[in-house]
Length: 501
Ligand SMILES: Cc1cc2nc3c(=O)[nH]c(=O)nc-3n(C[C@H](O)[C@H](O)[C@H](O)COP(=O)(O)OP(=O)(O)OC[C@H]3O[C@@H](n4cnc5c(N)ncnc54)[C@H](O)[C@@H]3O)c2cc1C
Image (cartoon, rainbow, N blue to C red; front, side, top):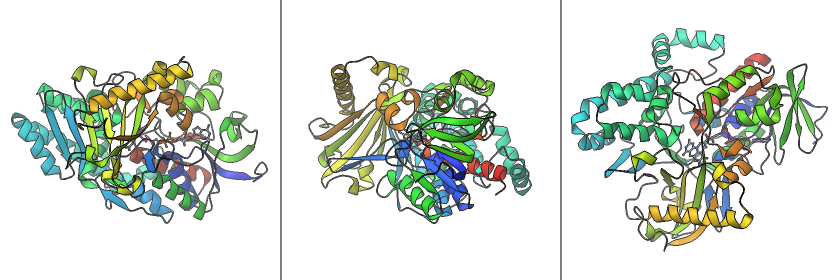
């Protein structure tokens, strides 16, 4: 394709879920859209890879947003907008926690069953537990009663306010608050407060006091409302279906198309240049790369707008992950094993590198992802890129082997015989996340440098550079597939209004 002379309405840099939702929403409105993806398949952190008969999810596997009702089921809606849908398998338990002080809790899809399990463990906190999670439902019910589009578009804000004034006022009240403040209002038991820190940490990578209440409300209610649903065929199927829908709607995607720079004319974004030298022009440019990559690599770092400098003071890069992808004999998993687990042995290490261990076993929901008689275990734990720099290729391989061995040893506590039952292992480090996902330092996303006013500090989609927008986890409302889908809906809406669609 020679597109130098062709002008698109919008170019999207990157085909993560944020980028693809933006592109499909715009294409559905008849905009001429081009997605440029540096890798060979779409999806970014929600992509997949095949090895030895196993299909592994790169990252995400606890999937929100596939509910059937309400307005917060954004993955269902994004697919439907381009005539696509996906079979999903409901997960009866969001997560099984294995925490210090013998705290073993399952978060059942059934809300009352979950509350009962928690209250049985903390009977003296029954009222506090019901009030805290009850406030989460208030946030969710407000969100789930309105169309979720761009909060920086006055026409939409006015319309949504007049349609549902109470929900809007309710949300406005929670926007500057953090989950920890609300938890501490109702709960005093230190162990239960630590549990709520972990409830937040597993998706926000921050304790409750730094986790915005809007996000907590979404997660802590939607897991019981729309539920956690695993896409048939693996998480990678979501991006693939979005691409099918994009192309059906007239949009285009090019793989192995790494954008080297955003072209500016008179200070305005007018197109992009690939590492190959190929140029594409568009009325609007949307970056699905992280804000650090966008403003330090795709644009000259020395000319960074003040608004971005301010954002970088408020938010820092979270660590990346050490990811160990295992193929194991089915006998390793005790009967009744759940799909998602969290393991921590010492509260003091919850936020540390190699502290909390995350586990996903998607083959318990979709056995087609592994050869018969085997399961996938994807286990990951926070790790900083600095811990993996400056090593010879040999030392790097050795460090991977040692680190993976230590994770497996720790997991023997919940899966005795794991080491014996190993069939396949592949280890990814922060360097792999950086390389394959194009994310600076392999970061999972932005986290506040200090306690902020809830979500108020998170930027929307427009940027200080005219014609340039950002979408994905470094825009409102943050990390997670359903969250970046929200950011995609908002971004497409803002761009469509700006383009007059
Ligand atoms: C290990 C792990 C586990 C996770 N678990 C969950 C989970 O269970 N549930 C959940 O909801 N979320 C989970 N997440 C988070 C979730 O996956 C992310 O928040 C989300 O996928 C980010 O989407 P995005 O659209 O912002 O960008 P990304 O997924 O980062 O996609 C960006 C895309 O842009 C491309 N790109 C970047 N730069 C360029 C360039 N210069 N030129 C061309 N293309 C470029 C990249 O190749 C990539 O495809 C997990 C993440 C990780 C890493």
